[in-house]
Each structure stands twice: as structure tokens, then as C-alpha cells.
Image (cartoon, rainbow over all chains, first blue to last red; front, side, top):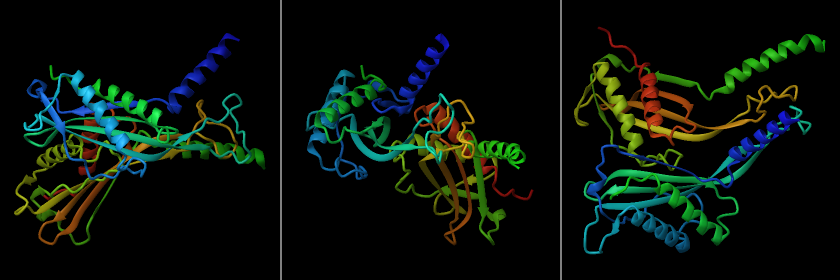
Amino acid sequence: MGRQLLRATLVLTVGLLLTGCATIRVSSQTDHGIIWSNYKTFDWGLADALPAGDPRLEKDPFFRDHVAGAVEKAMATHGFVLSATTERPDVVIHYHANVAERVDPDYVDRDYGSCASDDCRPRVSRYEAGTMVVDVVDAATNVLIWRGWAQGSLEGVLGNRDRLRRRIDESVRQMFETLPSAR
Amino acid sequence: MLRFIRPVTVAGVLIAALALAGCATLRVNSYVERGADFTQYRSYAWAERGAFATGDPRLDNNRFFSQRVEEAVDMQLAARGFEKSGPGTADVLLHIHARMEQRLDTAAFDPIDGHCIDDECRPGVYDAGTLMVDFMDRRTNRLAWRGWAERSFDGVIENQEWMEATIDETVARILAQLPRKPL
């Protein structure tokens, strides 16, 4: 009885971990030789020419403004100052969003270890996977010094402004936790 | 009849599962252009980096990735006696291509009996990466040698150290296939 319960719990936990629908995965890469205290001010770079892979994100002012706001807030908490328009900033920020279809395999009924359907083919569900990439570039040398990203399923997010706003905030916040501080 | 077939089927499925499991394996391959005399090549240079469309937004225009690949190639070629020179004088120009895509691996799934081979009973998905190194003859502008490797990159990009180690190992395995120079 106890064992069965444990097993069921384990299966549920693993299932929740793997389906990952609501989870955001963040990570970043950097050059470890960077002296972050040299960088104090930032500004926005030109929008990149890479396609977003989804027309719903192209030229969407709501998305753009919200990402910009969230990134500026995150940079401020790390001690960076948005540079005055007349000054050259120490770093320039670019971001890029991408949507791609990915598949997530479904579990087969584990209790019996056999197939529910007759043809016994693995079932997969498709979902829209979003990736947001933020680049911090040395303004003087034009060299990338930090790249952070957040990834997650966008099912039910792109068509809902509230969810999209929350997702952007949470993605940017978590992503910037991996940025070394300027302080 | 059925009794006779069964063990054979099971063995076949097991072998197929091992062959397809693929996640941990690294497949390398290469070819030498017909008529290319590899012994005449002594020096190389990097061709201009093209727009890097990798299929993964985390790797597009990511110098932490592309520079590491180039450094790994430089190291391997130096160990093989190649000389790095300018793009106007080198015997060969090198190009790198990288491509990521999501793969579905159904090996964990017994397609015949409707029973699961492993405990998890779930087809797997993983990120597969292909890395390709091209040697172009600078004078004829024709491909002289191409080597590539295909492997799982699942979770690799999220961990920079792991990515760097994976690049180093993959590049070493690709270039180990270069035709040997006669002494």
C-alpha cells in the first residue's frame, strides 16, 4: 500500500517535471574573463534582423514595450543605469524572441506496461515552445559579453495579454538572476 | 510457431533499442573529395563567418559557441602540423556549420508486443546537434574535405562548461578522421 502510494507519487512528480508546460527554463553563457565592474551604463541596440518564427510576435508594440520594461527593471536591480541619450553606453542590449513547434511524448499507461490503443504507437503532443534571448554587448568593442535566455511552452500564452505579460516578467526576472552584478 | 518467433523478436527489439537509443552516442563521418590531394595542404585560414542559422536561437550569433568551435579546431590542426595563415595565402579555408533539431526516440517502446522495454514507457525527445567542418581549397574554391558529427545536445547548451567540453570532444573526433599526411 505504502509502496504503491510512493510509486504513484513518484510517477506524478516525474510527470509534472517532464511535461514542463508551465515551467520556464533559464540559463546563460558568458566570457569568464569579463570584469563586470567596468560596465555601468546601458542602452538599447538596434533590433536584430532574425525572424521570430511567429507573426504574432513581429512588430507587436505590447510585447516589445513589455520586454523592454522588464529588462530595464532587471538591469537596474543589478546596478546598471540607462545611459543618457547623449552619452555612449558601456553595454548595449539586444533581445530576440523565437517560437518553434516542439513535441512532448505522452506517457503510455505505466500501471499495466501495455498500450491503451490498438496500434500501440507512441503518442506525442505538439506545443509551441518559446525562447527569449537577451544579449549584453560591449558597446566599445561590439563583442558579446553575456547571453541569457528563457524557454517554455507558450500554449495559451500568446493569445492572452495578461499571461504574456506575466510570462515576460517571470522569464526576464529569472534569466537576469544569472547575470553578474555591476556593483 | 509463435513460440519459436518470440525469443528472436525480443532479441531483435533489444538490438534495435540499443542501436536507436542514440542519446549518448556520437556518430562521426567524413569524405574526401575525389581527386583532392590532401598531402598538399599545409596552411589554413578561417573563412568569414556566415550568418549562423543553427535552428536554435540560443546558438545563433553566439560567439561563446562559435569561438569555442574555432579554438578547438585550431588546437587540433596545430597538433597535426597545419599552419594558420591569412585568408589570402592559406591552402584551405575552413567553414563551420552547426545545426540543432529535436528528435523523437521511440526505442524505449516495444512496437511489437505492446509492452514497454524500460520502466519509463515513454518515447524520448532530445536535442540532436550536427557539427560540420569543411575544408575548401582556396585556389579552386572547391570542397576538399568534409567531416561531421551528430550527437545529442540535450541539456548541453544550458551548461556552458558542458557545452565547451562537448565541443572539444566532438571537434577532436571529427578531425581525427582527417587523412594522414605522409611522413
